[in-house]
Length: 391
Image 1 (cartoon, rainbow, N blue to C red):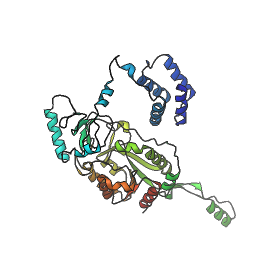
Image 2 (cartoon, rainbow, N blue to C red; image 1 turned 90 degrees about the horizontal axis):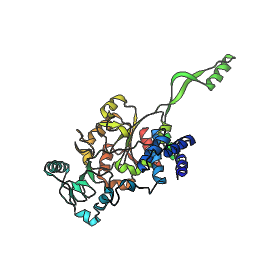
Image 3 (tube, rainbow, N blue to C red; image 1 turned 120 degrees about the vertical axis):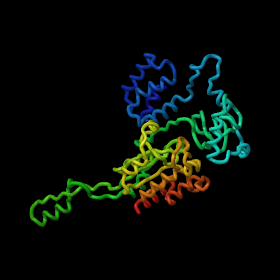
Image 4 (tube, rainbow, N blue to C red; image 1 turned 45 degrees about the vertical axis):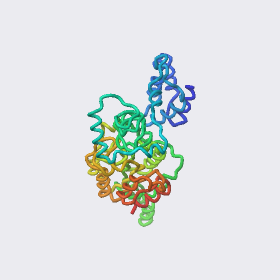
């Protein structure tokens, strides 16, 4: 199994060496993992991964190779793990049952009711429709269902109906070294490139050298500035939540953009643009970049590309405080308008197929804010988006 793990890591593009594999074997002989799966995971990761950009590849291979290993050795004999009980209590409803559950009626009402529940509630609740709890139809809690609520105490999204998420979430950076399965994305991006001769004369101008030599009757070497890619691009990637379904295509786009554009900056956001963005998802709560500072730093000649599914609660775009993760002082629409006012060449790439855009109100709202410059994240859509950016 361990040899399979090693070979699959190499196949996935993680640069592991035989020496690192032997180091892991030596550590296991010393019982450093203490026969616990979690400890073995971290031991293998620190031994075999040299670059944090490969962590996501490592996680995928680890999950594939060691699928089925559990942590039952950690649980006392005769006891059912807590996670089992939590899943047993999870609420499962038919589509007819879901249709009968009503939302509270607006963002302000939802936030006001949550404040009241926090003041009044004194103990744990399960299965109800009012209190903060689990496996119910209350707007507040985990492992239940409500068409519009605040998710509390639940790691992953289930129905993607939360207006806000109480818990701190962690996202992973996109892998910009991903090998492309096709060159079509790169071909589409090439349409945006424009070249100009800038800087000091450092490249041989063969035609001018031949012309000058023939004119003078002796060798006359002529130089010229190197031809450089003059396009400057800012990429904004929506990360986490429903965008987890589109990580692969976003990584392909990221890799292609890294190759095609010599002057490119990238930033992450979640759902809609607000007062700050970030460069590393692992530090997004501590190492933020002011969006206002970004607007002052990068001049208006940059091309701006948003990448996201634009699928969220309309409150996140239209309301102050509507962000799913924090209390934003201004609505997302205000920040989107600032971007489009400054950067006249801006587009939005959406991985969702255009025929489905009409079913999600937030997609229509953002498309209007982008002045109908939203394109599908397909080769054809990329081609049209690049044409728009060159106007």
